[in-house]
Length: 126
Figure 1 (cartoon, rainbow, N blue to C red):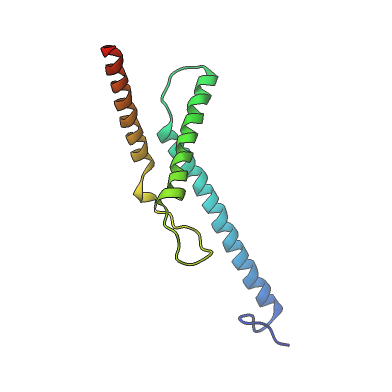
Figure 2 (cartoon, helix red, strand yellow; figure 1 turned 90 degrees about the horizontal axis):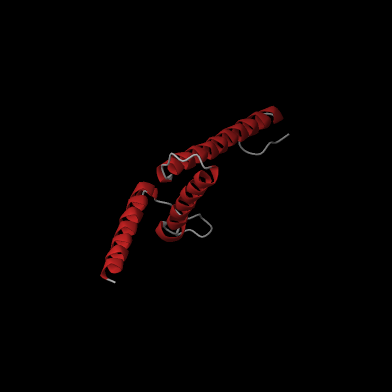
């Protein structure tokens, strides 16, 4: 009886090898998904608007804004900052150090501050 490479001796070796590979893959994927969830919550806290209001609708609005900002950051990395792979069929290569979420948020604060200052100047001139 012949077995395909690398399972030479018996079907039990095949099953044992297959089970180990499957378990390793499942552990890796589960950890990867869990790491992504924890990273999302950490970044959500970075983008969250600080408030002491007890109004649940306003608090929900602030959380929704934080999630939208994080999703914009993810989209920017995917659509603009990622590098296309030279091999057909491979996923894009993300380089998350090119634009950190904190940096994007700081730029947005500066841009909003400049915009509001110019609006205040225009309103005071009129």
